[in-house]
Image (cartoon, rainbow, N blue to C red; front, side, top):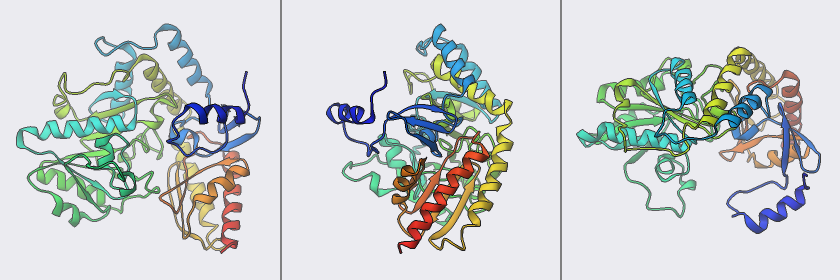
Length: 398
């Protein structure tokens, strides 16, 4: 029996470490882009699962795949061959490149990439990795140090050695950071937590050229952009620049914990037995979920759907500019939507929630939406109407 939000909150306050800022709502059921709380109120979720629920809530085919797999086998360790793991690796790599290592999260995938870069450069003494301001790579110590945002480092020093930070778009600045100890350059092809920031034209190709010139690995963190989020299977495919290593998570399992690192065949052997592992990584349940997500995206033609929706959303948001001078910039890449304001964006989250729409704010001034890839035009219109109303009210208060 479902209890009310108040009872759930009371239990949490007593027993759960308060390391999250939570809204006073307990979500208990979802369908598509709609979710209900324990008190029966419904919301349109334009940020489902922080981008993990790429098909929204409880898509029937995904639910069926998880149920059927759970009835057969949930988990066996990686000391055995796991049928679904091989199948999902084939699915991902045949749509990208190389070979796959599976884990449980984006942070774990990035830790694997960091290890691989050091192992690959180990014979030459290379270990440094260049990352970028406003990027985000995870909360474990390696991934956290790779995250060039001081607010995430407070109170946690000393951090892991070997990282240098540059500004996205500054190729000359990157070049000046490269030395004989540099092993790799690591970047999100679209910065997610940094505010849906898209690299300037030619920048990713410039990084590829620098890596080729100096013998470095190019690592793309596609934790947020992968699995169709940008309108192609992976964001790198829109730039024409292939990385040596790619990390994935969030939407990979449609809400089931799942992460992966994909790397070129030539460097896969550097991650040799005993050097890295993940106890739950690649288990049968997560792999069955990932395969179901991938097949649904293809069967329903969602990559084309995302491109069409992105054009529509951009045109809609651009039409707001004249009436809403607090909008500084609009950034849309598939179903990654960022509305940068001239004022703090945090209040918009609570105001939209009060009106039954769930969104996110990031990097202080950016309203961020990551709708389900199969979000309907009707749900988009309803949500955007609420966001516009909220921004209008915020603008009128200035």
